[in-house]
Image (cartoon, rainbow, N blue to C red; front, side, top):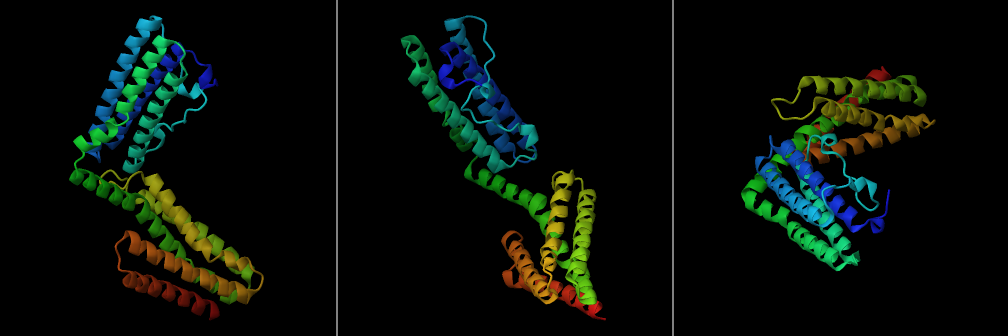
Amino acid sequence: MRNFSELSEREILALAIGAEEEDGRIYLDFAEGLRGDYAASAQVFIDMAAEENEHRRWLIDLYREKFGEHIPLVRRQDVRGFVARKPVWQTQPLRLDVVRRQAEQMEFEAARFYRQAAARSEDASIRKLLGDLAEAEAQHEHTAERLMEENLPTDVRAAEDEAARRMFLLRVIQPGLAGLMDGSVSTLAPVFAAAFATQNSWDAFLVGMAASIGAGISMGFAEALSDNGSLTGRGAPWIRGLICGLMTTLGGIGHTLPFLLPNFLTATIAAAVVVIIELGIITWIRWKFMDTPPLSAAMQVGFGGALVFVTGILIGSS
């Protein structure tokens, strides 16, 4: 990699041409990824890609006038100081808030690049050229905001934000909550049954780990195979399955780990405290994301957890 200060004016202009082309393609990728769920925002990025393409043509005309026909390949990843961007195809499904923030960051970086290039040029004609480009990018820096205002009225943007929230609930919160509830509640019976039947912390720990991991695998496959997301909009099934499976395992392991303590009574009390904390977290998530009244959520979760907890103790003590 080379330092930015080592580039000639010719290389800087070549770098700018490549950067404008890359940004335009990124915006088109944004538009394609958002088209199905956020049509208005997709149109914003199509318009921004058109702006980038117009700047690229302007840069090429200026380059040919100054340096001739051949444009060397100078890429951002070959110059120190540029922020590496993760390819859009690796970040599916696209989140609306993330895409908007990345677009703002891209415009800021472009404007800063041209300002620094203009500031260090010693040739009068080159300084003028880069100054004009810096001014153009300074105006372009506000293009995203202008296009948002033109294409996304307040009501449309609010509707898209609400749609993004619903999709986050469907694709992340719902499978995660289902897994956490299953892992925290369903594994109570086997863990505490084993604990009270054997009066041995290590035996209870082994049963808890087996139940947690087994439940996580089962719930993960069940969630992934239940819906491919094509009609419900719940996203990629393997992502939902992974989230559900991991949260199921986590929910079970939480009250299993205390049984690593050698003293049986201490381990059992610690596990009971962890169970209360787990049920409290589930109650908070149901209230925060699922619009369930806190008292109602606490009663529902607490009753179910207590019922399974008592069942495990009774079976283990019999």
